[in-house]
Image 1 (cartoon, rainbow, N blue to C red):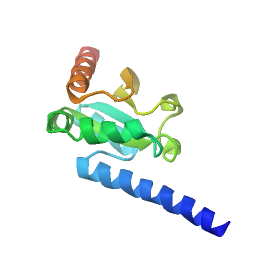
Image 2 (image 1 turned 90 degrees about the vertical axis):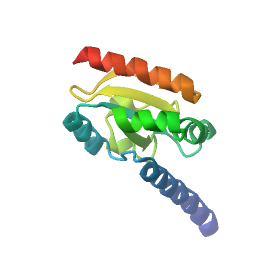
Image 3 (image 1 turned 30 degrees about the horizontal axis):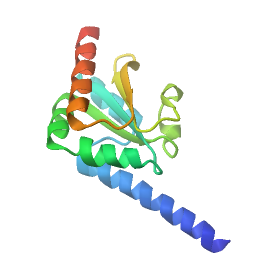
Length: 143
């Protein structure tokens, strides 16, 4: 029993460390309130990515789409990006963003925390750029 508990704890801690390391490497925020304040201050849209430790599509989305130079450069310049785990970080973001789907990306207006757009599932980098551009247009129109 102790071995099982240890293995479970160890595997969860590896994911927590991995998500933190990935967020740091990508210059993504990990705290909703901090990301929201930064988005307000910089007058940028907030992009919140919900991930989960057991989701292979989340890893593929991170590895193939978000890490691509095409997407990363747009995220770095245009928005504040927040990466959260839907289960382990659930207490750190508003309930209206809770879901069973992952990966799920919310495009949020930081002024009123309204959802401008959202997209569920894995998408390739060019499709994500198009989704991001459309959300950016909605954000600019809402100002």
